[in-house]
Image 1: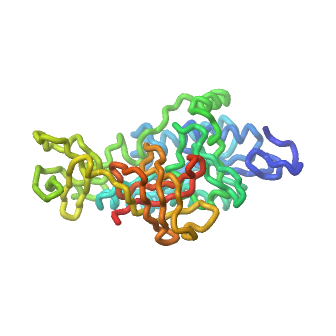
Image 2: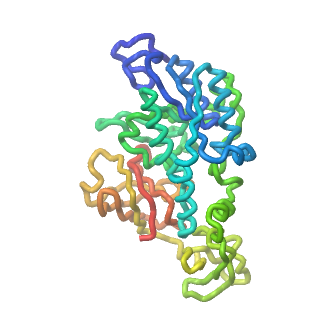
Image 3: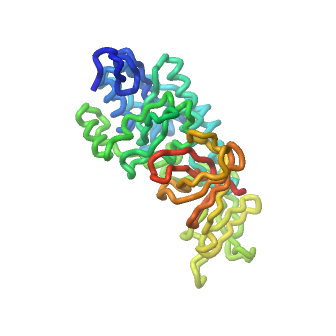
Length: 381
């Protein structure tokens, strides 16, 4: 509930002033989540400014549904702002997005990694350039529709998993720095389910109340990564050999970019007694290496570019007994994290995991699964 006047108590965003004296920039994707955040804060009386980023070619975007940054979504965000009566701006971040996210995505795939561009977008665009824009607009904070919780601890702002485990987005936000966390707000993180969000959208009369969730990476139509890579890097889909772990040729492949670590189907090498899985990609030699399922098991994971959100310095201890997620779809697992430097570590999984892939994130959690302690990027070692 909004406060009528400063009284030593904090408003719902944590400031000791009236909502109408508190400016908040809301990052609006055009989806139901960020729209509800903007509407909720506007109804509480905050000085809301909606901002939507145009991240790639608008003409192509108009022909694509179900992506977070398409032209249709820009239109939907504008309609929400009109409905709730607050200003809305569209910022052209196309060049920034291409340089900071899309090019690395393509190069990582060509190097045999499995990148997560949504994390890089949060890290390098939304929580960097857009956050800077929010400061330029004299906003007290920036709010997003992410399902994650920001809590105040003894040492300052902390990142915690969402109340609804099925909606938790902490894996994609591990690289949020402590400084950024001081400025960010996540008003949906405490909700028990997505149904609550949609109910709020209906109550506010938002035109996006029944809009489906986006499923794809915004610049990858229908999840077809290979087609995007081929367009960005002509010649990237050159064919090569499928070989076993001893180097024996088992067949031909249609380009390394069509394969991922752990893949079993679509290898085109049937007739073998036991199933084989992709265990390694060698783009330089244009080889896809396959092996038995047990060859996918990994216990030691090298991690770099670590963003640490603990209270004590990361390298102040020899090891940290925490839990980690090595893919967004997997639950946290027990691990011991051994710092090599302030930004590098060796992660030992207490139980081996299959399909650990360079380019994925390794995110650190408290043993009780609540607090997020940051994380880093898995590399080949």
